[in-house]
Each structure stands twice: as C-alpha cells, then as structure tokens.
Length: 302
Image 1 (cartoon, rainbow, N blue to C red):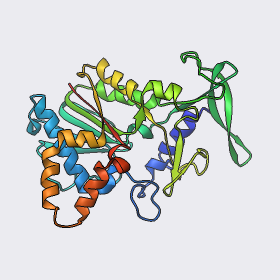
Image 2: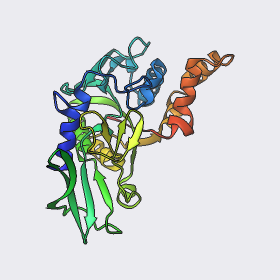
Image 3: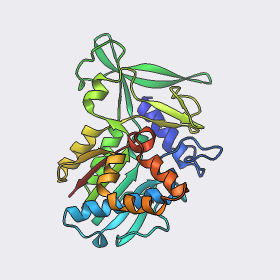
Image 4: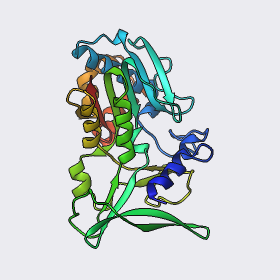
C-alpha cells in the first residue's frame, strides 16, 4: 500500500489507530509522546481567546455573535475548558467526530493539519516515485511503488524526498467549503511550497515516541505519532478558493503580541513579582527559542 494509506491506518484506524486510542498523548507525564502549546494549560486558551476576539473586532465583527469551534481536540482535554471568553458559545469537535460548520464561527485548530496522512515521494532516475509500505514476514519495509508522480517539477538532485501533505489540504478545503463565516485560525508548523520542494532534501516526515524524535516511520504502528510539515501555500489557496480575504501567516509569538498584546501586558503585570506557573507558561509560549517560533498561525476572515 502507499505510505499515505499506511499512515491513515496507523493514526486513525477506529480500533488501533494512534489518535483513536483513549490515552493521554500530549504532555510531560510518563507515557506521553510530545508536547504542544496546549500543554501550557488554560493560559494558551486565554491567549487564543483574546487574540481571536481582537482579530474579529478589527474586521468589524462582534465576538459575542460568534461560536468558537475547536477542531481535533484531545480526548477529555481542551485549553478552553473553564476559561472566561467573549464568544456566544464554545464547541469542541474531537478526532473522529464529523465536521459540520455553519453560521458565525471562529474555527480553531492546534496541530490538526500536521497530523493528517501524507504522500511520500522520492526523485529517482529523473522521475518522481511514490513510496509505499510492504509487509515482509513480520517486518514492515519501505518500498518504491511503480507509480510515477506527473504533477511535480523535477528535483534538483537524485534522491530528493518530498513529503506532500495532500490530506491536510483536502481537509482545509472541506472546512472552508461549508456555509459559515467568521475567523479561521490554525496553529501548526509548516513551510512554503518553495521550501518543501527545494530546501528539505530529506523530506519533513518524522515520528514521535515518548518525547523522542525518530525517522523510523514504520516502527510501532499505532503507538507513535507520525507527522510532516504542512504546506502553508496550499492551505492559504484552499481558503482563498472559498472566499476568505487574504490569509495572514505569523509566528506564534508575533500573532499573540499583535492580537493579544493587552492581555499579555495585564498578565505580565499581575505576575511581575513572582516566578509563577503562568509567567513560565507565558515565556514558553512567546519566547522564540521555545514555542514562539516553533509554531506558526494561519488566519483569515470571511
């Protein structure tokens, strides 16, 4: 099968898929595999809420007339639980739940798109080939399928890998095509199409298992996370195609400072005299050496 088919099973099979199992994957506790901005707890939710409200008001929209929808939340966890917010209501759609969007909304996701199955391609002998997975005895092996990829320009060198996040783009189109208006905001990590085609010769695919980064994508199917960088150009195109105003892309630190500056100032002043968990969380979310430039934010209004 293709790698994209393998990854869909490894992550989303209803019984054994990594994201379908009722266990804690995110955080610092034993047995977790990675951490993300939501690991900082309610402060991340408060920052996102403040930033989205500012973004809506700047576009002449009233946050109180919009429902905030979080898509792809972890089981029994959400950074928005219990926080004060200016929106009409909060909705949480978890992995496997149908995505139905209508009305005035803020559609939010955190590392949703990088967790979608992707196609793996390699440039070999003057043409692009699709990579697949084969079962040999008890071992899974990576193979080159006898399938050309005609829609890609030639790579600059033999052996160049391009991990194409096609399912992420399809998901963005599915979300954008539905009858809703308001703010789209996606926190994730990604690169431009130019960078993916010319600056990442080994591709961007990787796996996470117990906070260890590995390039053994076939090990422990169903027990480790699989991911690659999203293509910001493709996601932006999906939004433009469905009537969104020109999408903006910021580093996480820039997005929060520009859109939630007042909240940050108030929080910093309140925690100025002590080294509290909120101050540490704020530093982790904003500092460029931590999460401030590890993650980016794509946002657009319709």
